[in-house]
Amino acid sequence: MAANWKMYKTPAETKTFFENFLPLVKDAKHCEIAVCAPFVDLPAAIDAAAGSNVAIGGQNLYWAKEGAFTGEISGPMLKTLGCEWVIVGHSERRQYFGETDETVLKRTKAAIEAGLKVIVCVGELLAEREAGETEAVLEKQYAGGIAGLSAEEKAQIVIAYEPVWAIGTGKTATPEMAADAHRVIRKMAGADMRILYGGSVKPDNVTALMAQEEIDGALVGGASLDPVSFSKIVNF
Ligand code: PGA
Image (cartoon, rainbow, N blue to C red; front, side, top):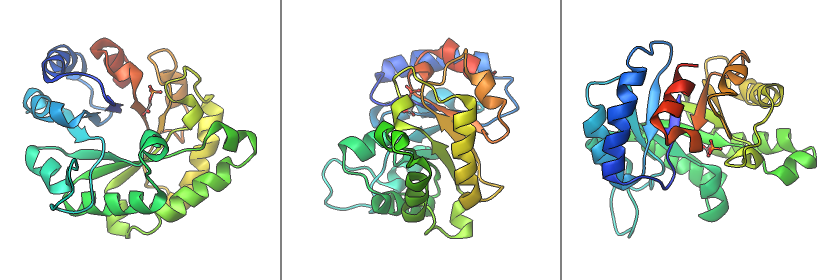
């Protein structure tokens, strides 16, 4: 169960979140929990979550280890800080920041080399779904962004299926729609891959989504910002 805070919260708000959140999920043994926070909040999150059952992650990284890349953050930087996870290829990065399947693969490889586990995001746009292209889009994103990983590297990732039209819109894919897409991904990624669903996951729809055998967890945006709401999702 992973939180994607996107561009929300200050370090002080991060500290407050964990003070409230950790006691609510301390008995959760059925899942791994990760919170992917903005770069500037990571030290506060890592400090607050130390010794708990909650791992911390970034939301992006650059593929070089270091260098003249103004504004970028590397895998070794995240790892040294104490991150365990990083999100790669989120649809907002694909839409607004020029992320492609090729750069998804580069970032994912660099993250794994740095010792991070990766949440690799895939998903179709509304127009692609309406044109009946969902399966083809997922196959293309997998072929370009994920298939080039070795078996050892694949063991370090989870895939998040996030239909772009369901992100932040309140429109969740029905559990059946999500499961259909997960099956397309599963066929390519194999039985051992953990596949998360993301897109308007809330405390009141998480149980039906998680009831689908194909759905192994959730990547949660808006509903992860509130500690009570995210704890209800974790403890579905
Ligand atoms: P949402 O975002 O839960 O706010 O729809 C999910 C995501 O973008 O990871």
